[in-house]
Amino acid sequence: MGEQKAQQSDSTITIVLADDHVVVRSGLRMLLEAEPDFEVVAEAGDADSAARYVRGHKPTVLMLDLNMPGEPSLQAIPGILSDSPGTNIVVLTMQDDPAFAREAMRAGAIGYVLKEAADDELVHAVRMAAAGETYLHPRLGAKLAAEADDTGRGDRLTEREAEVLKLIALGFTNREIADQLYLSVRTVESHRAHIQQKLELTSRAELVRYALDAGLVEPGQS
Image (cartoon, rainbow, N blue to C red; front, side, top):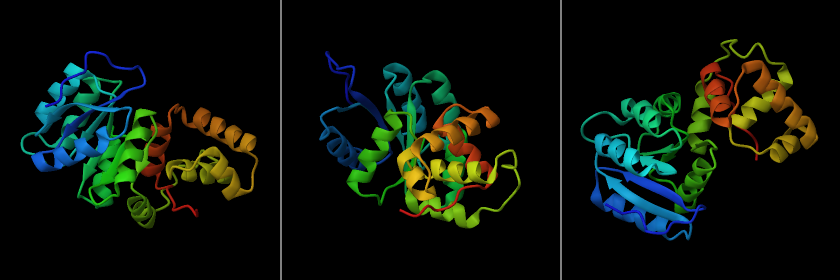
């Protein structure tokens, strides 16, 4: 287990690692702490320990494996977030079934990364989570889109707003969305504001969860 350092910069991204394999945690710690602003403050081998360390350390990010002994990680997520609302959860797992990604996001996770991911993707996911931004492994995004059906739950949005929401859910920036749809950045910002007002949602994570629930996610073109 890591201990908090005596002096910690306000810009430090603190992390609790939760995985039942010691060798995996060791590798993750080395990878993450190679970043100058990352600090692993604790390691856990099950969801109960992860919840306890999150309560004690209030980390920026919890990196949570789905398959550990004891309480299922998915069931533990809401309680962990209730105890530490400022902590954002990134699920790191071998489970590439989009159903698990959907359930993790609905439970409150903000990121979903496969263990096969490249090192830079994992670091990127942690940084996005620390900033309150959602990250979903690209292949899972494509699988979700392939399974999605038009349920009509997005019918409060115009066709253009639905297109913007889909790209937001896939992680595109306002500039990238503008380029995709041949709009100005200001127009995209306006559409985004209207979407948030209509759906009464304020954060990107909430918009992503709505898009997943409504079957609106489609793969974007880079």
